[in-house]
Image (cartoon, rainbow, N blue to C red; front, side):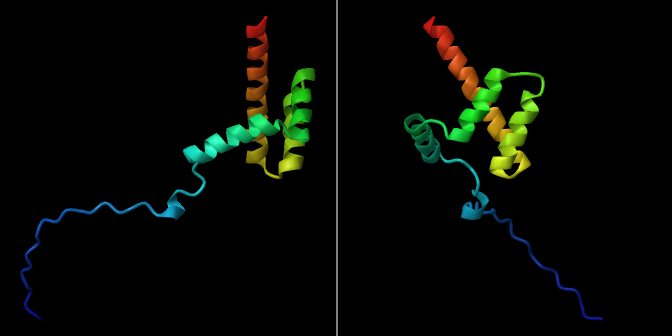
Length: 103
């Protein structure tokens, strides 16, 4: 058996590492948010978004499901479809609030 060595351990301070770009992926930056808002304001809604708004306006018992199915056909995934449906509901609520304030 080899004799065991006694080692001294000095207290060290951990250095904070800079965040790597791959860990920021998918996070919305302030600049991107402003650019998207300006584009939405200038360009308006895409035709399929207008159709989803019409579905909200007509309402009905199955409008939620119809909006989801339509968005999923256009966007491809479950998460994107649900997010788009919620975004369109928010836009519709803002439109209604603006109309109420005008009256």
